Image 1 (cartoon, one colour):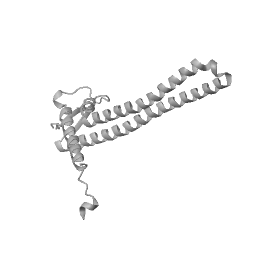
Image 2 (tube, one colour; image 1 turned 120 degrees about the vertical axis):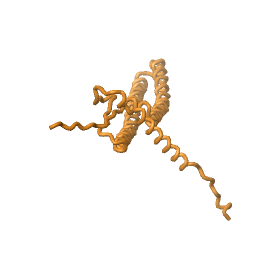
Image 3 (tube, one colour; image 1 turned 135 degrees about the horizontal axis):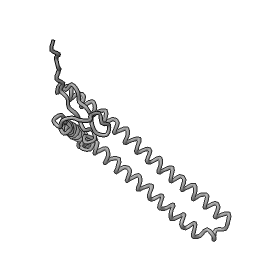
Image 4 (tube, helix red, strand yellow; image 1 turned 90 degrees about the vertical axis):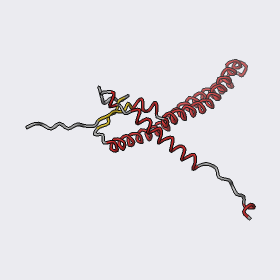
Length: 178
């Protein structure tokens, strides 16, 4: 009795490459880089003011007298600690926000690939990249570029639709209606 062998339709996606080339992922990274630079710039200004105040304090410490020097020194230490806390809080906030957006993006990409696999009749679509689950595959099974193109097309189309929906309409003033 001859055993039947079933052919499976398989493919794989390089997830690292996909995230590098997917426009929405690039947009999220750019958004948080800009946000980090903006928030960091504000904090940097405060840090520079603190450094200037600390430098002035050290130069003038002997003139203040013991009690005033201790009081000002304690205030400077408190400000330094507050700046450190603010810096930590900013980093944590940005990591949390960007992490949430990237998690949402990854869920969407997984759903897209699942739907794509069903539509194209694949039995398996594997993932390679950071978390490798394939040790070898022929290049012909690599559908990364196809998935990236379709995701980018879908994202671009969605962005254009969103932009069209939010275009400003002329405002009609009450007196013009009469």
